Amino acid sequence: MDWGTELWDQYDIIEKHTQSGLELVDKYVKFVKERTEIEQNYAKQLRNLSKKYNLKRSGKDEPDCRFSSYQSFLDVLNEMNDYAGQRELIAENMMMNICIDLTKYLQDLKQERKTYLMEAKRAQQSLESTYKQLDSSKKRFEREWREAERTAQYAEKTDQDINATKADVEKAKQQAHMRSHVAEECKNDYAAQLQKYNKEQNQFYFNDMPLIFNKLQDLDERRVRKLAQGYILFSDTEKHVMPIIGKCLEGVTKAGTNVNERNDSMVVIEQNKSGFERPGDVEFEDYSQGINRASSDSSLGTPKGPMDLLGKNRSKNFWLFSKKSKPTVTEDFAHLPPEQRRKRLQQKLEEISRELQKEVDQSEALGKMKDVYEKNPQMGDPASLASQISQTSQNIERLSGELNKYETWLAEAGGRGETLRYKTHTFNNNGAHDVLSTDGAHSDDSTPDPSQAIYAEFDDDFEDEELTAPIGKCTAMYSFPGASEGTISMQEGEVLSVVEEDKGDGWTRVRRNNGDEGYIPSSYVTVNLNK
Image (cartoon, rainbow, N blue to C red):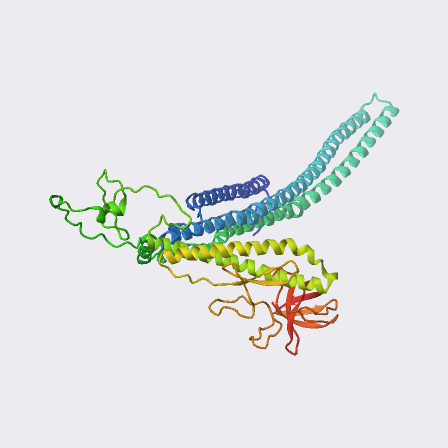
């Protein structure tokens, strides 16, 4: 069943129905737009909420950061932030796949519908024009036929009049004949117009309008089908991100299961344990015997009572839960209880050791680079490294002094210094390497202290080292003599295995097929690392 057959006479109904369908599409687009605005506002509020409660960490020393409940709360906030991102994605996809797509499709449908209605209007106007011509020819035929009858009656009457002359009779007959001829022509014209109109009317009702109505029916069905797809997309858009949203919610659940109340209690103990012993019994002081109190007042070490534990103000009664005044922070952490002081000193030692390691690495790299520049002046000026070498040496000397200072404090606090001891390299005025231990004294390379971990300078003898697996290949763009210690020669076009990539000092460690290894300038080769 189609509209052209069943609704051939319902033009107004079809026009109204198709217009209503387009308005429904427009209404749905507005609905989805408002939904996307709600999603965007929801996501924005979630992000602001996560940001509001996501406490900024002041550093690794922040006490709360070590609690599992605190970390889990941060994880919950992060998951909520990711969840907000998925809500934004829903809004974005709905806007792109539904609103924008349906809006464009709606404009095309409106233009197409307008075209069909214009075609129907032109067909209607053409039929009306033909009908007007038919009606005009019909009226003319009617008028001329009546006039012909009148002239025929007049001619017959004149012919029977005995007083009429022969000329009058002849004239009347001629007039009647002429009018009859004109009426016959009008009759033929009317018949032709009628045939033409009937043909056009048949074409209008059985071909033109049914075709237009069927086109409008197809347009409307496509509109309905597209709208149905929009309804499905409304659901699928959210279903598509549900697995990710599910993972976010699983992350929140995991954050809850990761909370370990026992470990948090242990962290409280670790962070706040003072190391003091509980105070002993207060001794009886018999003032009647004149006992000397100086010895008890001047005792050092473990506090003997609440006043030693909580303060020295003897004008008040002190209790375990009384408010303590904030101590003055000192460099050696002497303001902290013994246990906490040892931990802070150990942390400080580890930080200084890491900084010292970096400076030693830098010193080593600068030494290699200076040696290469001295033996290959075309690669650079050795004097340009003087300021960097001097600064690095000063940094090593400063850090070594700090390391010794904190180790001394740690020993006083009853802790053991387990940090690495480095032999670092400084440079004299001639560019030669001097070895400086961490206590700042110069030592001889031939007599290293076995109790210290030696940071050894790179040596081109790799026989005692375990061979490292290559991480890529490199091709030499230029020849390199490899005359300095730790380097390796190469010829233009030679392919070598990359063992260690450039760490920022301009050198790459390579190996030949025969096992020879050494450093080459990174700018002399093209490197292709394994993926």
